[in-house]
Image 1 (cartoon, rainbow, N blue to C red):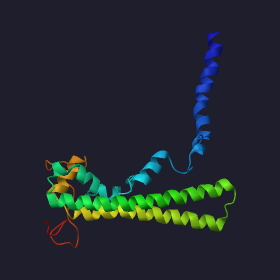
Image 2: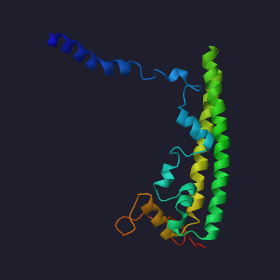
Image 3: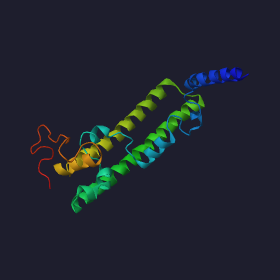
Image 4: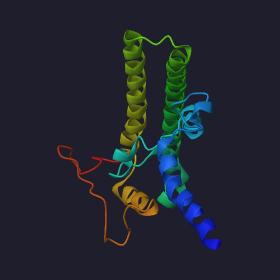
Length: 191
C-alpha cells in the first residue's frame, strides 16, 4: 500500500520543475506594466541606479549617494560634502525624470499590445524610444560617478573601495588610480 502512494508522489515531484519551466511568466500578466517588476517600477520612480553604474563603481569611480553615506569614514571636507550633495540632488532629479518617461513609454507599449492594435512601424518607434531613454538614464548615473571621482583624493578613493568591499586599506589590494593622459595620476590637482 505504501508503494502505491510513494510512486505517484515521486512522479509529481519529478514533474514539478517541468511544469514550472513551461510557465515562467505565470502571474506576471497581473502587473500594471507587464515588462517591469514592482521593484523596477519603484527604482525608476525613485531614480535609483539599478546597477547601471557598475562599470564606474567597480572601477574606482565612487557614486555620489554612497560617498555621502560614507562621508564621515571618508573624511569629506565641508566643501566636498556640499558639492557632492548638490551633485546627488541633480542626479536624482534627472534620473527620476527619465524614470518617469521610461514608465510612461513602457505603459504605452503595454497598452498597445493589450489593445491588439500594435503595428510594426509604431512598435519600432516605441522600442527605440524606450532604448534611448534607458541609455540616457544609464549615462546620467555613470556621469555623476565620473564627476564625483574628481572631487575625491586618491586616499579617499582607496578608503571608499575598502569600505564598499572592493579592496583593502592595508595595501594588499588597492584600486588603480592612474588615468592615461591626465597629469597628476587619477585626479590631477585636488582641492
